[in-house]
Image 1 (tube, helix red, strand yellow):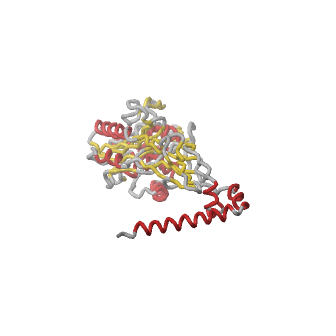
Image 2 (cartoon, one colour; image 1 turned 30 degrees about the horizontal axis):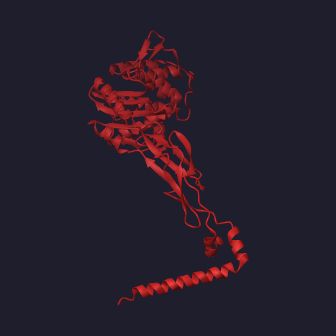
Image 3 (cartoon, one colour; image 1 turned 30 degrees about the vertical axis):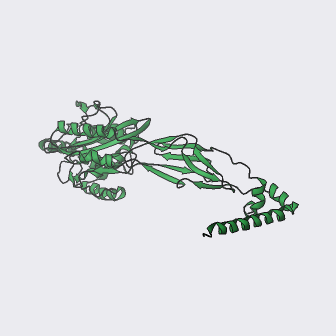
Length: 406
């Protein structure tokens, strides 16, 4: 015959005996009962449903897919982010993109203030000789009278719009003192901004040894967009110049034909057509600036088409990512007697993210609020309880002195 029922009965009798004994002892002590009944219970225990800080990331592979869809050297990025995606790590001849780099080096410590003309330069006989030299080399140059006074802004219009080689050369001599001094400054500038792929031998881009890889050109464009005077001049479609020259036009083929285009520079070297182009976009109320670099295209038409295609593809990459949902449980409170009250977000928050960007959600130490931080700023979401605790009865209080009195 099994003995299990008898053992269970013995254990049960022992529990009842000791419980009754405790009850008798406790009830016999009116002071303890009163003290247990009136004692303030310990604060509920807070437990987060996840880590105090959580990070949500937009898929970076979508950006890489855009450049991988191009068979020729291509890189992309955004002005307000550090990431760059490229399909080619090799360096390539730059053409007139060299001029943008030269101007950036010259303005690194002494930028032209927006809306100002800057210093004045007097065109010399040596400058006129440079004009003749570049025309003979099938470069872009303009006959400017010896003795004519050009402001710094005038010279930059020639450099950025029609990409004048003679003016770029003269500008470099004026701002640096010599080509050798320019190249020395360039090396320090490359180290400062971590642009190791750039190699220049002169300031105009007429030499095929002026080279960089596509990724570093995205970074160059970011620097250009940070200087208001350069960004403004790169975005000008035309300008009227004196000395019988008349209207000069920007070589950027997308200015005026695609919304939001703000520059940045074209480059041509022999049969290779290059493009560094930037575009302001608006995605669900968030403003961003796309940067596309396309190199080694076969013609002006191919250059324009590549810039348009890549920028269009980039326009679809930003995504609205949910960071916290309304009613989402983010923590719990557990009472001393084991009751559980969920804490939930009293609202929702999302962030518009570019590929590789992140948004962070953090919970306050007392779990009263949740903060979502993204590229566009912060949003605070209250955290609320969904239920209240019931008061433990007297029996629980007097039979759990360790929990009641800690």
